[in-house]
Length: 306
Image (cartoon, rainbow, N blue to C red; front, side, top):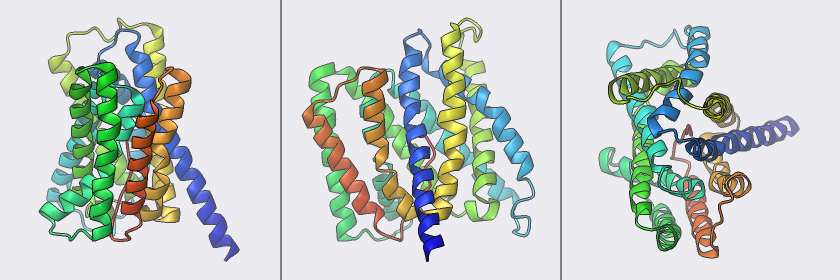
């Protein structure tokens, strides 16, 4: 019993560390924007620095779950969900951050558990309980409170940023809904590494086709931030979160993930001098309470990755 309690506590600690590191991504991206770098360029640097790590991990875990048959269709779906869940979600997120504050970004992005519920209801015909329905209403009410107060302060560009971040949340939620049946086939670490490699390749192709910016034209601070985002806000937390989920269950982890918006608000206040009004802080609290209510339902399967 003591060992089980100790494992649970360690799992919570690992999960919190992973969430805080994930939350630092938005802050570091905003810092990078101070050096006149565009969204696709900083996203490219993130993936360039992440790519070798995921390539090595994919190789090391290539023999994981070999006893489970994986067909060509499974790999097609893996590519699709890597494209949607990590490439599109990341791109929308980085673009949205050019318009809104890091703290507001995390509050909106944190809607993804409720989006998962709605998508499950729409496509998989899974029922939504009264508690979950109330939690959905509560979380969106919290977003409205935080968002509209920010519009009055920062102007109409906040609408554009908010839409992009919402699209990011929807893309990531779609990945969670659709990839749940693939993860047991590949294994968590192997699937994550493969999906991230897909995302990296998509970003490389996007940059080569769309961008006319010279990759070597940025100041040294941009490359340092790109490396930090890749290692400390992408690679390390992605596996810390996987470990935490394994130790404490996905439902319990989803509750722990409630520290995400709060940690971003604190980090943004320290490093970006962002200040949230009392109304926005109240909106953030309402969102967190709503997510905790959603996460207490054991039929939800959530895997966090930013």
